[in-house]
Length: 71
Image 1 (cartoon, one colour):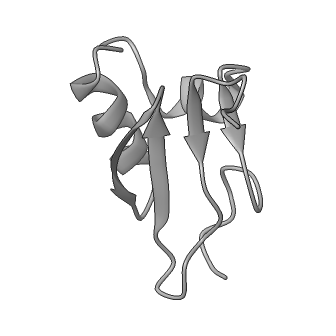
Image 2 (cartoon, rainbow, N blue to C red):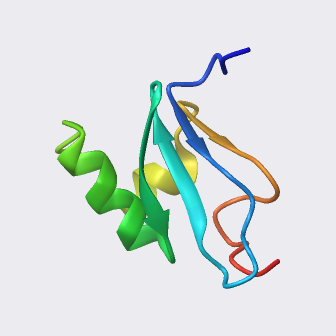
């Protein structure tokens, strides 16, 4: 089963990192919003910034929203 959202941020792991998936590809482990922004820019979303990441309907947050970084 795939997500309807093109960007998925997974729940925090034990060290506070969150896996980031863009479409069907895992692009890295984020430890803050700036990491997510960088992954999205590398994936071709050059206009992404931390405000966009916090508010975008294109992102599915699992296990808590953009303010949750600890398990």
